[in-house]
Length: 264
Length: 102
Image 1 (cartoon, each protein chain N blue to C red):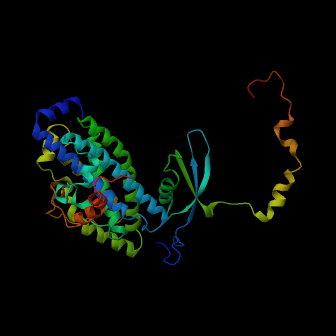
Image 2: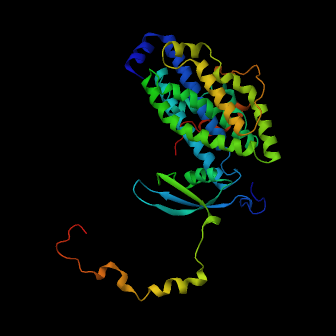
Image 3: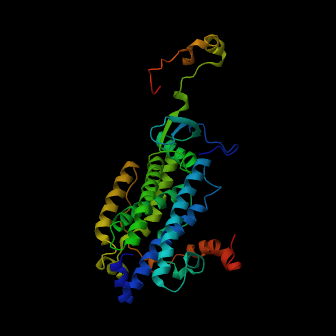
């Protein structure tokens, strides 16, 4: 954090609370998506994809570690990355609802990944210029990883969408089923507005426009149809989740919950 | 995508040979091969399989089928004749004292 924004956060408790929640949203989205990708290890279609998906997962979990550590420092209650990852319950997780959706078939995994990759590209690009130096540094590192993730996922999107009748059908079905979670990506609430006002995050409207343009271009290359806009009753980033997150956390947190403080 | 009986990639995923340049200035070296549906995927697979421990700064992939190889049955004709021509090694040339930095 820059000296300026650190001082501002100390002066303004509400700003500190909003920054904590904002950083948790980024962290939890990466953590939950990384955990989902980890479920593919040992089950991917071919060995090379097994390694590829695991590499994406490790990048995302690495982002989550940096962000959770920072969130713990902002909160100032002594919670480290492990405490935040393993000892919070589902309502305290603030990830995007899209990130927690099950892997489904390979097409579902790729469409989910691609939609979030495109989102992270815009969010991290903006954050790399944040007035909060700590967030700017994390975003600059994550942006390099995300550029590769998008290359990977958009490549698969085109391959599947413009592939066989079956791969095309499955990919369009995945897109149609996951699209309802995308309205949340750029729906600004009071946390986002406070971050924009403080110069920590950029306003979401221009990012949403860039995201839509990229998504339309990628869908064009994949010869897939853009689904119609849908209202969103999803509020993962406010802690209201689909039933899938609890099951994911049950597996992810099992060891620490069963043997508190265990190390290996 | 994969053959359910053998687990191997389907026959329509061609084999690619992978070459990695370990750092700028050095040549690309053959490191192995992998299956991929297309060239772009082959580069991504090569990145994930062969450069995850910072082994390289550049990747080449070549369809194995596009490589023209010498026939092992012709090895005698191709390589044996060089055997008795050791004078082709530069060690047979005397270097004048005036020549530096060689």
